[in-house]
Amino acid sequence: MNRVRPLSDGVLAVVVLAVLLLATVARDPGAQDRPLDVLGYAFLVGIAVVVFFRRQWPIPVLLVCTVGIFGYYASGFPAVGLEIPLAVPIYTVAWAGRWRFAAVWALAVAVFAYASRVLLGQDLLLLLGLQVPTTLAVFCGAIALGDAVRSRHELRAEQERTLAAVRREAERSTAQRLADERVRLARDLHDVLGHTVSVVSLHAAVAEEAVVAGEQDAALEATRAIQEASGTAMRDLRGTVQVLRGDSPDSLDPVGGIAAIEGLVDGARSAGLDVVQVIEIEPQAVPATAGMTTYRIVQEGLTNVLRHAGAERAWVTVTSEPGVVVVRVEDDGRGPAGGPAADGAGLRGMAERVQLVGGSLRTGPRADGTGFSVSARIPT
Image (tube, rainbow, N blue to C red):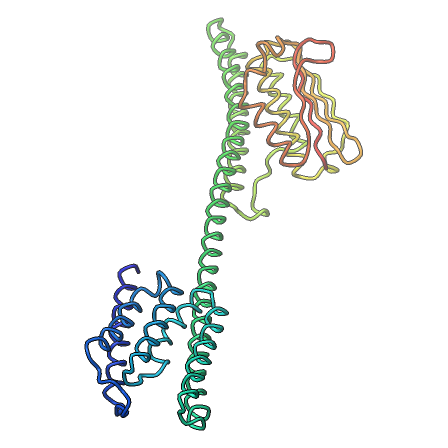
């Protein structure tokens, strides 16, 4: 673009010079006219050369061209009109956004030029009937064209800025969606696999001890618990993958819910944890999103108790208040110092889940200062 502009301005300067020279040749010099000599050519060449710099200095170029053409006429050289040397500078000033200045300057130049010619005794009818309207029409056309081109360029620039802003917003939105999907995937995988791995690990230890002790029934019971936990994990994982793939809601496998909490409690009990379960709400009365969130809170809470708390007993309580499901998972283990608080990813995932549905989460020691408590309020 920077190379095209000097080239086009150079071509325009050559065209202006050629038209000026043709005008001097086409007109018959009057008796009072001074023959075109070196000074006359210098005026014409100077006007053309100055036109080359019209983009950088539009108003100075207009002023220099005006002084040049009046100096040319004051020296007595043959007439070449006002339109040829001044139309391009006037157009450029209007293009630069100074159309009012261009209009006032063009009018002042026309009034001064033709008033001088009237005072010199030239034919008034010819001036007012032909030359004055022609000059004003050319000047007005140059101003209108310059302002129109400027407006078009500004509109195009505004459209480009708008498109650039839209692209930036789309890129930002896409990046945010990808980040949200990564967080969601990490949260779901942590909840599904973390709980299952904890249960499987505990039952595997029980099975190993039973085999060493020769207690075949206990070993078989532990392996069956491992199979059941693995099957549950596969169902949860399949449902999570279907959601991430955007499958139709009608084709999704159910993932969690109030009714499925009992299975989590049974799994924890089979791993050796004494769990007291209190569910004082009808599963059918809870929307699917709130039910799944409640399920995940209990799942992660029990996982943390099994992995970190060293607890003997845990309490799972699900109750309701107007418009809210209240879920608590508590234990009598080591508490925040060495308990579930150490699992930052799990607690962070629970907080994110609850925030997504507009709820609140509190974690910390139980009311009596012992163990650990996770309490969530989930809007229905």
